[in-house]
Image (cartoon, rainbow, N blue to C red; front, side, top):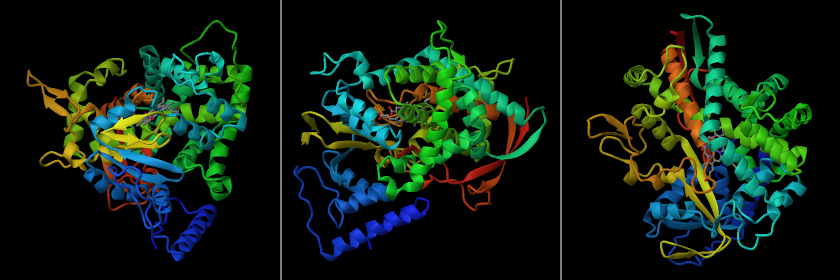
Length: 545
Ligand code: HEM
């Protein structure tokens, strides 16, 4: 039986789904469909299974790791760095190689991302039909200049551009990044202070468990304000429940096939709808002041996003979906696991912990008043190398675009309407790109991205070309939160390493039972951006400062 059983949590609904899929497979096998769909483009190798279309689509949806293992050797052998497969109704090109990747990241009318983002608005936001129609109608693009043919479209109907403008303005500008990072540092400091009120205080915690609670609380207070955590006391639990099903929701299976996933999404959105209703009513939208932060919506980014949605006439349901995905989920779901991996790698090696401690101390990262000198922190070579290495090894993202006009790549004419994917899981683990003697590509090597400068000093330098590394995607839809993410992750590491004496106690599974092995990537998140660890490290913390 070629059906790969899913590694997802088993629920009655998923059992029903798999039983149905298994029946379909058996039927198809019985009538012996063995023909392979011929490639319409002979220079592009075809990734195919026993049953054309169905095998690969199923593998992709149920076991992303096995899909990568099958695709990788074929892609490596492909002279053009392109292979193709059928993903449900879409012909999909899997691409590699810096030139090909640069092509999809270049701003071009012939490469679009709306198909991918539109799917997410339906399945993950749970947008209403009317609001989905607004997004589907707008073909004017994300740039200030409307795409050809849409020049006369009224600005308020340009919803993609509207959303892009809010994110680009309030997430990537230096002042906003500074405010968000400063708020994060303040709130994370406060939660640590509450947990360890006096110098010398000790406690045993799981590193990832601590971040999922305390780091998430600090991120949310900084980005979304303090009132939301008071009004929704189980917000963090609802968020992590939602996080567990996001990648599966993205496939858009109907509710009857994945009821449990939709229930988790709806519980999260239901709480946000109730919150937003009151928050929108109570906030003084007429005020001339636009503070950097206030308790109802937190940062300008979160407030301006809600203001834009209200002004554009979106329903409360769509608003809750967008608010949940683009602010709460986006701000936590990737930077938290990455911060956890940075800490796990540092703490499992006493010599690396000592080196990081010295790097922080020598650069006086902790100021006399206890605050962090974030500008200097961001330029520390060893910490940057550790951060980069963890993004390389633990971000598993299939960056997705669509061919929207005539497009040629490595001499191959790509079919219009087809999907393009660049997988970090394949490119970031490529031995030829990243491997060096003694340090294979699969290994975490803290110093992989460090070179000696002319003065003999250590400098951070990415160990490959810029298009070989794309944890934050690329091109116009590149992650707008990348600057904030880096600050949050490095600040978390710096605060814990400099304020505490940390002694590892042992590895535990996610229920807290002792484990005989260290953490690995949790396969359930494979293909869905930052992959969390499947084990945690229990540590003893003793407050030093
Ligand atoms: C390690 C941390 C992070 C990683 C690896 C990551 C990765 C990504 C990737 C790969 C994309 C898609 C880009 C593309 O298609 O080219 C994305 C989009 C996005 N990210 Fe991040 N991200 C991280 C942190 C953050 C943070 C901290 C925020 C917010 C504070 C954020 C907000 C967003 C938003 C709003 C989008 C656009 C989603 C949409 O339009 O539907 N990200 N991110």
